[in-house]
Length: 197
Figure (tube, rainbow, N blue to C red):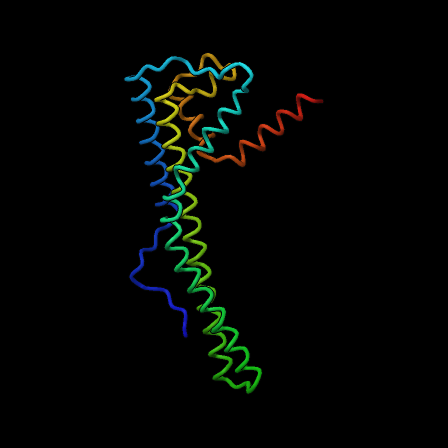
């Protein structure tokens, strides 16, 4: 069975996806700013005994759980591309066996074509992964900006940067929380290591 790439599937360049991500981030920043202005939440302060970054981690964890269903839907095109790549791998293996058994110009040409199909399928899978990564990060960051604005959870203010405009604080908070728990965990770990030195 030959792995093929559907010609009618849209091919977006990375620039278009970055433009889409930028639009999503701007929408998140606007939502966060409007919520911050309309709700006017009191400044967020964690309870005694809780570090500010532990709250950031919990916020990121909650956002990841919220994004789980969206992630599953976003992975569907990549699953199709992954199956096409697996089929292309099998086709290359079969062509290699045929070429080793009886190497002719025809078998070498078929092998070359199958390898080209495999490279194309791998490129499609890479494109899906890149698009999904950009879209999911931008969506998570935009939701985090809206959440930060609605709760008054301003990370820069929380760590002592008092002169930062609210919109910048909402943007930075959204980017950090939207990045997920792994980078936050690494940041917390490094801060704790610096404190213990």
